[in-house]
Length: 490
Image (tube, rainbow, N blue to C red; front, top):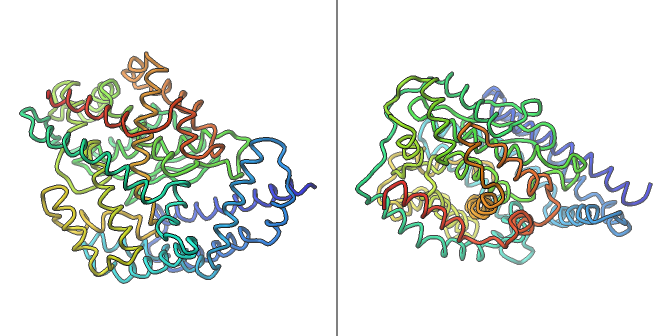
């Protein structure tokens, strides 16, 4: 065997073990008994130790030095393996295992604290998480900025300074649009009805079908916080149900289907290679957000969904498809990021970005986090947080050690705006299909132009290749202003 073939065979086993670790995480969030939390932490630490050893195996350096790739795809694989090798080698094996153990246990403690609205129950655990992740960031940064080094795990090539500049550019138009719609004389009706869980889950499955989710390689389960897990030929999604808020379930499902379809759509020849998964969380989020918002909340698709909801639940207080479209897209006061409308969603991300950046830098202590969150929320949104589960305890990310992840949500929104502009130009008859509950013309375009390529290109190159132009915030902001000014009759 050549050095290249030996390396790729070794890497295939590493990728397979990483998938097993991911499956343990899925099990923990869906069906694991509560009493298994501590043992699962030990299991996660054990498999992380194995993965860390493989990713820093001394043979990798030798293989990488000698390997001759047969083509551009092979060269990209070598680049990605080398990047992972160099980054992993900077993190001590003991620290990597402890992070895996601690964050596994922490997610169970967070879920308990969230259910009880008990911040004090979670803060000691979060303190440990922050200390461990800060240590990891410092090891990765090698004298540079620790938060920048953490961002690299989720969006290679991005930096806190670049993301802050993006937020500064987006904020004025978003704030002005929010003020205009909330002050408009016309305000869409809100739902005021109960929607049975069985009906919501049945409609969720229909929506997954509409967006071409492959049930032979996936499944839908319930979780505290919706997520997608896996890659290749086993990609699972979760949702959650609130009987008086069916959009929470339905649009969480569409969102996670977007993530899942990206992974399922990647070229099968990339399976269990570094190219066989989404290239970044920003690009990943572009898929979930364009599925959920530009397609799922479009006038065409909501017209079809209105009919299906009437058939499933009977009359529910909204009289016609136009009123339903406005209700689906209603800009409203609220606390929860995952339930936020398109206009305000990015403002939720900006809050988290600033707070976690300060936590990692040591400018903010965990003890002061709740107070800082509540003060920032009041300043940004104009009203006070009413309980911790609607504030600092609402997101799973910090319990899982995912510092540097949050800003990729807004980057994904930006990318989705660019992709939607290109999609509409390429598929002019799209609305006719969406109005029949069929998103396949859009999902086929995304599959061909973005999803199938997996990690072949860098994140920005992936978007530019699909769109035919460099990504910027303008398409997203223009889309939001056009859509919501029309809805609110401004």
